[in-house]
Amino acid sequence: MRWKPFTILILGMLACLGSVSAKDMVAPYGTATVQTRPTPVLNTVFDVSYDDPQKLDLLYDFVQNTRKVTRGKVAIVTHGPELRAFAKENYTKYQVIVDKMAALAKEGVTFYMCSNAMKVAGYKPEDMDGFITVVPSGFAEIAYLEYKGYQYINPTPLSTRDIRRKK
Image 1 (cartoon, helix red, strand yellow):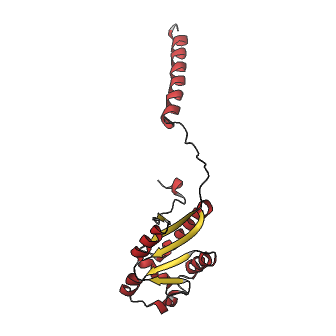
Image 2 (tube, one colour):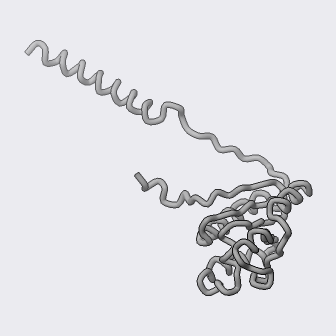
Image 3 (spheres, one colour):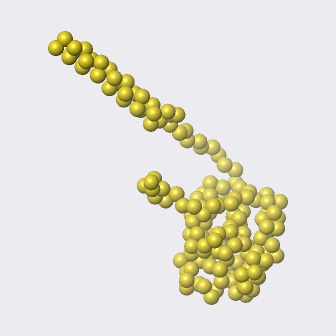
């Protein structure tokens, strides 16, 4: 019986220490800081080469979110398999995405398509939607836009939506 109060005291102390160290283990580096600063107006060029045209849906979100901060001109250079979404023959298949891209074009976003990639895919300029401008080389267009002061962005088409719930 003499050990019971001492044991309770020791167990209570260990429980307190355990909760402190458990908290430290959960967040050993503290909490993230938030940085806000004025951003100058920046023109941006998005380098787009997606294996699946459906990923253009993410591009729409990337462009919208970036434009809120940069507030400058936006160019999109497409030179991968996603270009088939802009072919008039595929409009019904990709209508939702193409309509979003056309809405961006109406808001001043410029769309350039690589002639080389288009030809390899079997398309001609007349096969593409009217808001597309075909250029001789997608990479050369990106280089030209960077020369003109555009900031390069390579938007990897990976969504973070629902990532917190994924195991």
